[in-house]
Length: 492
Image (cartoon, rainbow, N blue to C red; front, side, top):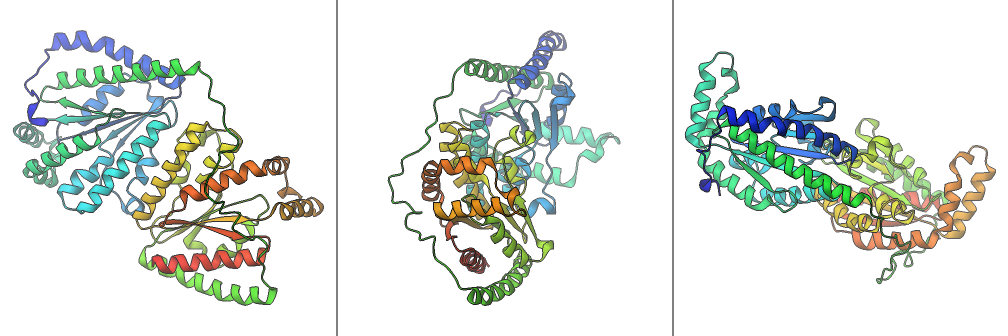
């Protein structure tokens, strides 16, 4: 693919000035339109060392409102980044609706520099391609526009530019020993680049290869491509803005046997037995937490369940057994204004634990297929697509070494009603019961159907669901702790 490019193309100054002026004006207009339509734009620049990535980004941004974009220069990961899945540092930088993010190098470092330098094995490269594919598809499905450029120069041209930079004392620092080492690996990089282009150029996020010997030619190609892609995205947004969303189904039929119907929520435990079991469990969990830190094992524990099922009590007993320096409890409700401007998974990626630490999620990413589905806060297409997105995301976390546990705390409808009334009568607990809880109870059947489908479609070997019989709070708390112990011991 690269060999077929004509690197001799040039544009003279007069032609460049004539063509670039209207493009600069149009880029500014399109930025404003993208902001109005809430389109997050991600622009990726990859390419050879000294191919002109920084210069082209700078040329682009001079035509834009600086309040509407961020530029990220991606360097090798620092320790904080190495302790998390490799896509974490990119998820946290994805732009909110209406903003633009420029990436000077990106997640493709994994399949380029890391590959050539043998920092990752063949299996990791294959997995990286899968993860990149799901990452970009999730963002695109969520409304993002991804534009990818690869700046191409010949080996001879790269050497010429390195030598020119080194000859000037003010720019010599820009050429490092690593740059010269990569220059010597040009042929190996070319193989990696060809592989990357072939495997990750898709209809929704194609690569634009930019012949970059002549900087004016390269700038015009980048501008013209970006204008075309932005115009197409904005036209689509304007076309779709007048349409009405299809009606959401309150109940989605699940043909498999209900997992909830198999569970007897009335299972119980005597107080004496509970106290004995809890003492043993707490000591074991305290020891396991320290082993997790030593072995750099990240742990995710997600809690879902019926209102008043006892999630808070179970979380307190688990957290009470842990060293507070090694865990975090993250409660989730409806997304706030900032979170609504991002992909729905963004706020969860931001809080996943680093290696050796534990994060407890009080409600989680499953809100997409539960409350957002039942309450029609998202379309059918969005919550149905979420099953794939959630499974892909949990698989990425698991393959990066994370132990994942998911609990559904299950109580009967009569037990829930009893607890609601108890909360209303207790002055210390009245804050726990809200009108929303009563509204949700009226939709018990719809929620049950959603829970059954969630359990069926997202219970995976690497991220198991545990349905906890929770009519008895004592039984539920012990079961949660025992499950955590069993799962973490297996992971260790």
